[in-house]
Each structure stands twice: as C-alpha cells, then as structure tokens.
Amino acid sequence: MAHPAEPAPIDGCCQPILEPGLADDDAAVLARTFGALADPVRLRILSCIAAQPSGECCGCDLTAPLGRSQPTVSHHLKVLTEAGLVRGEKRGRWVWYSLVPERVELLRSLLDTSCCRVPGGPAASGHGSGRQ
Amino acid sequence: MAHPAEPAPIDGCCQPILEPGLADDDAAVLARTFGALADPVRLRILSCIAAQPSGECCGCDLTAPLGRSQPTVSHHLKVLTEAGLVRGEKRGRWVWYSLVPERVELLRSLLDTSCCRVPGGPAASGHGSGRQ
Image 1 (cartoon, rainbow over the protein chains, first blue to last red):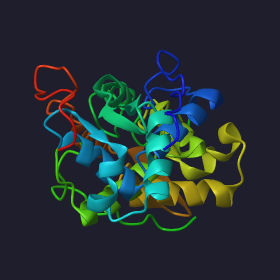
Image 2 (cartoon, rainbow over the protein chains, first blue to last red):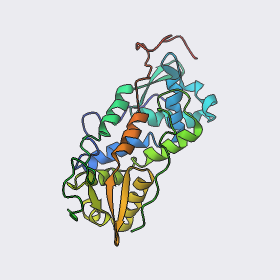
Image 3 (spheres, rainbow over the protein chains, first blue to last red):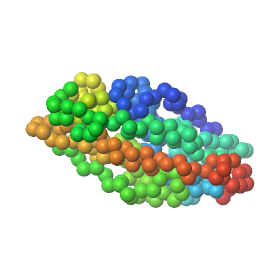
Image 4 (cartoon, each protein chain N blue to C red):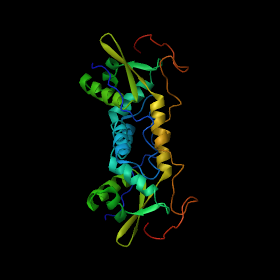
C-alpha cells in the first residue's frame, strides 16, 4: 500500500461558499475537496473507519466489507487522504487510517448558510425587482 | 433555458456519513449530491446567487461573471437543481434561481462529526490494539 499523501492546503484559504465573491482559485480547491465525498465507495470507507472502536482501521481490512480490490481501496484512500479527510500512519507493511474530524468541520463551516438571502426572506430586499 | 429539474430525494433517507454502517444505496445518493459541489463553476454559481440582494438571480445573468456559455451555465444549474441546492422559478423565457439553505443544512448535518472516534481520543478504546 502506498505511503499516505499530503492533504491539499484548504485551511484558512477559503471563505464560505454561500458568501458573495468566491474566487476562482478557492473554488477550484474546494471543488476538489468536495470531490472526495462524491463517490459512494469513499463515503462507505469513511463510515467503515467510523465503525472501528479504536477509531482507526488497517487499509487491508477494508477490502472485504467494501467488496472492492486492494488497488481500488488504496486509490480511494489516497483521494481521501489528499483531501485531508483521513490520515494514515504506516506501520510495517500496512497503513492504518483514522478520520480527521477537524477537516470535516472545516468543510461544514464552508457550507455556512447564515448569510444566505432567500427571496422574500428577512435578509432579502427588492424581491421581484428584476435583475441586478 | 430548460425547465428546472426535480431534486433527488435525500431528505430523511440518510444517516450521518461518519456513523457506522452507511448503506450502499444511501452512499450512492449522497455521493451524487456531494458531486454537485465538486465543480468550481457550480461553487461560483452558488456564490453569485448569494451575491444578489434579492436572493435570486436570472440564469441569463450568470454567463458574464462566470465567463461561461449559456449552455454550460444551464448544465451546471440543472445539476445544482437536481441536487436540491438551488431552486428555479420560470418567468417567461428565463428561469430565476435562488439558494435552498435548508438543503445545504441537510448536507451539513450529514457531515456531523459528533460521533467520530479518533485514536487516543475520549470516545476511542483499544488504541493500537490491532485489527477489529
């Protein structure tokens, strides 16, 4: 199994998505990070790791519950690691993976809706007044 | 511009991703929904709509700030609408789009980390005790 990859540096770089003026570069970084969650096998890997009482799971133990080959599982673990959602620790031949809750919390914070305007809502003005 | 599509029915179907035992079907639905956020143009569309004081934006007004063609913008708006992250209202020739904050909040709730175990953390047991 490959050595774990380094996560992309989204910490502190990006504003909440639902605020105006998201920059091109930030959008590209965030899209890649959300892309890590856009695959059912990867979501099930997160759930499988979460199921471990010790909070960590050997990559070798994910093939059976997921019904996927080791190379496929390794690929998805690499994507999750690069997104910073899991971290791996090499011990001998295998890598042990655990969740990175603070990274998930960062994604949650980027989906903050407190600034959202909705037509007719308390934060909206000029409902139906035409194009801006 | 095409009539807005119906969102996928994730409401109430899915458990938080970071709890054990995420089902195959739920994982597939959730992966498609997170896939809507896995594109920089779509993230910038959300930010552009959020920038409107009225809380809504004509699809025709997104081409210039995004630097994309109308068919491209329409495609991405369709993906966001199918994910339930925006809703469209047809008025004459055009569709006006607004954010759906409650849908974004639903995605946030699925990323709940309160049940996360981390190695050595207060909710973990058996750190380093081997495979489960």
